[in-house]
Structures are given as C-alpha cells and as structure tokens.
Length: 99
Image 1 (cartoon, rainbow, N blue to C red):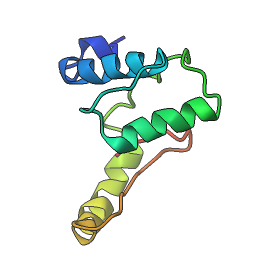
Image 2: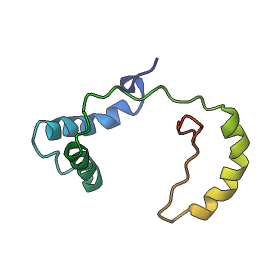
Image 3: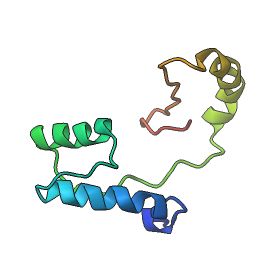
Image 4: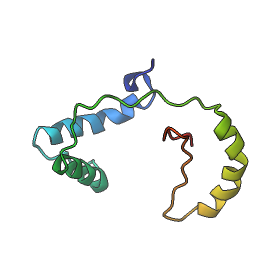
C-alpha cells in the first residue's frame, strides 16, 4: 500500500506538516500557511476532532465503471463551471471521491 510519504506530493506537503505540528503544539502555524487552512485547523481543534485519526483509505482505482459512465457528462459540464466559485465532485455509493 502506498503511503503519503511515497508520493511525489510528499516534499510539497512537508512544510504544511511542519506547520500543522507547530499548530498542534500550541504555536502559530506560520505566515506561509493560507488563512483558510489555519482557520480549518482552529475549527477542528475547537470541535474536538482527534488528531490521531487513521489515515484515509487507499485511493479508488481510476478505472471505475461509474467514472467511465459519468466521464462524458463531466466533460460536458466542466467548462460551464470554469471561473466560478464552484466544484464538481463525483462520489460512489461509499462516498469515495472518484473525480
């Protein structure tokens, strides 16, 4: 199984991890962390979200039948969302994000 440390994003995420550890230790996360992210961390702490939760499950395979069936619709709808404050998400019956 692949962990986050095995992905190309690991190096890019390292400063965020360090900032999160600073935040969890009671120190400011740092100026390089977006305000929205720091606010999400504060909200999670306020709401009592445990910081030792298990990692998310492995990603869903890219070749799922649902994604294959939905791709033509997604490709048609996506251009209409460009430039707006919207997101388009496709999730399966187990709430796993496919796209």
